Image 1 (spheres, helix red, strand yellow):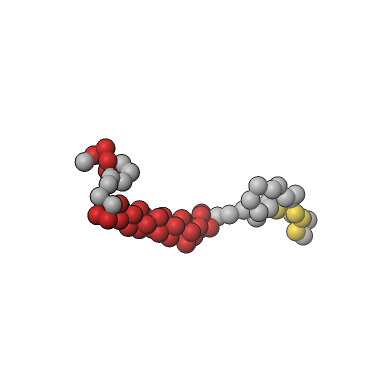
Image 2: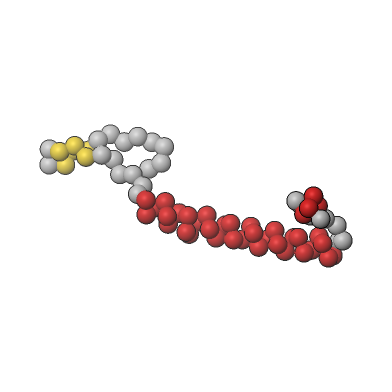
Length: 67
């Protein structure tokens, strides 16, 4: 589906285009794949921040530059 070209199909003598993803498909990809991955990574970043700040007493990431 992605990255490969399909030839046009004939249906009852009419040429139709190959199937392609719709806007809804992109929204579902964002909702069910990108958003959960982003939330998990954000949660891991927050957990690591508190571990480094309070357990190891060191700075973590960009917060070293700010504080």
